[in-house]
Amino acid sequence: MSKHLETGDKGSEEIPHSFIGIPEQQLAEESGRYGRDQDRNKDHEDGDQKDEDRSFLPMMDEQDERPDKRAERKSKHAAGDSRQKEQSDNEKKFSPIPQDLDEVLERLKNEVGYGTSFDIVVREMSFGDKRVAFFFMNGLANSLLLSNLINRLTFLNPDHLSGDAFKMFFNEYLPSSQAVKQEDWNKILTSVLSGNTALFIDEEPFAIDIDAKNFPGRGPEEPSIERVVRGSRDGFTETLMTNVSLIRRRLRDPQLRYELVRVGARTQTDICIAYINDLVDKELLEAIKDKIKAVKLDGLPLADKQLEEATVKRGWNPFPNVRYSERPDVVSAHMLEGAVVVLVDTSPSVMILPTTFFDLIQHAEENRQTPFIGTYLRWVRFAGIFASLFLLPLWILFVMHPEYKPSALDFLGPEKTGKLPLVVQFLLAEVGVDLMRMAAVHTPTPLATAMSLVAAILIGDIAVQTGVFINEVILYMAVAAIGMFATPSYELGLANRIVRLLLIIAVSAFKVPGLVIATTAVLILLCTERSFNRPYMWPFIPFDLRALMNIILRPPVLQNRFRPNLLRPQRREKMPKPE
Image (cartoon, rainbow, N blue to C red):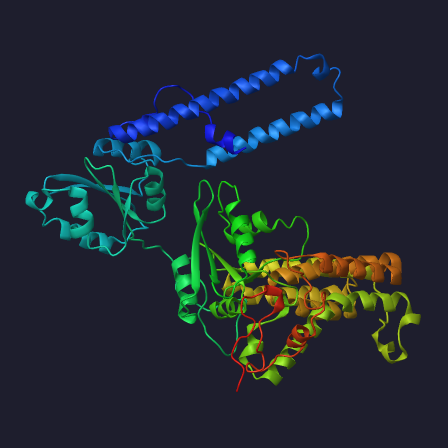
């Protein structure tokens, strides 16, 4: 496959247009490599021709060949060709920057739409006796910084540029602290489309890549779904540099590493892989990096969610394999445990890898209170999540089979069942709660209160009076909804709702065996699930008593001395033992 990737489709035998303007020595090298590529292309075509010739042999005649073998051979050939074409299209080969400034402008018109798109700006100027052109995106570049840069360069005269003009610009007259010499046309285009500014100089085969970004965005504010009573009020934003700065502010560790990867043939989305070098498991880190680099997509306009689907490949399993957080303190705490963090530009949500089921049901508020209060809050949350899963199925079971109900719970039974079966009432209530939740998200804030009153009157009062629902259905559905909203992970709350619907249907159809079989099936699914080769139900399965106690009880910080075994950190101890 690698040999096929090197060949690609060259089209004509003539030297490509991108070789024009290259020095003779480099042109000879490029032409030689181009000729060798053409030879390999020819050999590859000859091999394909030989394969076609062999197809006429009697033993390989399609009439004599078995249909399943023929179909398998054709599918493999088609798959190989498609993979080769996809990788060849995605890989951008080196393309030199033209020395003629007029040719640079012409390529900008043809390739990025200069003169057509109003936000593309090219400012042609002359400093000394040299023609130059600034190329940037209006709205993504820092206009004040560029104005100061141009103002400084206007004082140059021909004597200042008597030697190597590019060297003089780059080393002496360019005050920007973040400037890079660039000789690849494709890289300089991607850099400018990411917010940088390019400086092209006439008769020079290089360009200066100036970091003068100024992205439009909002300031850090507290995330709406991870609020705490005590704690910081800042949160991640849609700007990648802001997010990495918020983490760096909390982790002033020289071992903190930020690796940048770009994914998407068209979007070129910046993805940052963050970790602490002397804590993270290297095998885990390499596995995550390989999965991200292997993503072949047109782009990631939906940012982290599309990246998760492309790397984790969950399919139809509703349970999340990734923990999302918008709080820098939560992300920093996980990194100190040895986790890997993935930040995607244009998204305020950060992925924490790997994760477990029990990570998804913990909240930052528990660690902002005393250990006793934190443990109490944790137990209340666990009870709410358990009730959201099993309260409705168990109540339906007790109503349908009163003999299973303890005498102390006789008051749970309804006095009347209503005009609709209980199962239908619960399914309608589930759909109604989801509709209200979606309506609340899309309703403008001034109208949210009015919508709540309408929902309370229609569902809480009129629906009961007309006989659509009974009082017990509304009560238990409200308890289950509160338990779902108390789940810290929004994705896990939605998955638990699907499990609750499954249990309700199983109980109504198969009674006690349905409840037992459905619960066992979900538990087996969770126990066999893995997040980046880590068990999803750790520390319950496989059993780890110390880690399980740290989940049941919120330990004091000085007693929580060891990092989790799940992450396989390079250093287990969080602090030195007291003497």
